[in-house]
Amino acid sequence: MSQSLSQLYTHIVFHVNFSDGITIPEKLQSVLHAYLATVCNNHDSPSILIGGTNDHVHILNRISKNIAPVKLIEEIKTDSSRWMKTQAQDYGLMLSKFSWQKGYGIFSVSSSHVEVVRNYIANQVEHHKKRSFKEEYILFLEKHGVEYDEKYLWN
Image (cartoon, rainbow, N blue to C red):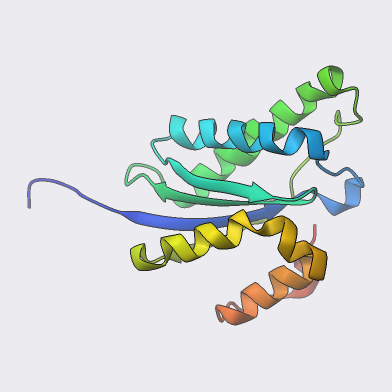
């Protein structure tokens, strides 16, 4: 085959560094999500939907065949962390020490389930009226059969 083709959908999840005690202000969340979409687009991995709450983000995207998932996530987290620090002055917030967790979750999404994941991300605020991000994430990992050590999930 002379042409390389792909259609890989991923659901990426990562949270703020909980040891900082810094969260994403509500008035900055939609701006952050737009910034994250720009970073994804700049790496030829367009987002379908980005959502989350004050302590985490979910990214549903179509990842480029030309970038390794780990590299894309590194770029997303590095660029957005740097950007968040610059928002401290504009928003009068204590974001100068903002950082993301060291790790992340990335899950493949079948093209037939893209809309289900999209709806899940769109309803994050509603989900978190019932359970915390930590509770949600552990349930998410267990549902998908991902082995984990909880002592390493939150830093």
